[in-house]
Length: 119
Image (cartoon, rainbow, N blue to C red; front, side):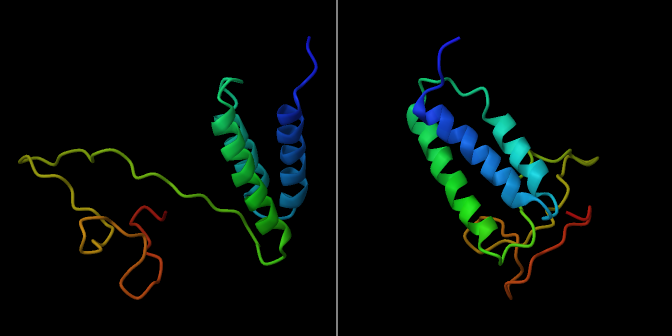
């Protein structure tokens, strides 16, 4: 087995630091593990993407260490088209429209919108 490259050592070090910084913060350790697991299949030759993710992880580490963070969150991609209701119409979206055709996770006053399913 070959020795790990410098970038590989940096990524492993970042992983350990994120896990340490996330101790005691709800959802942090699980989120860190899930994020690294999700990107584990990146090819070693995709250095630009790996470096981008490394820098992003460094920024998240700084936020976790800042003392202001009490938990870790994640942006969630909207799911695909909803199932059609009888009659050929789609179910109404629960997120308000920002006026430009995009959906927002906040109401007009800046408060987060809670979906009917509790997310």
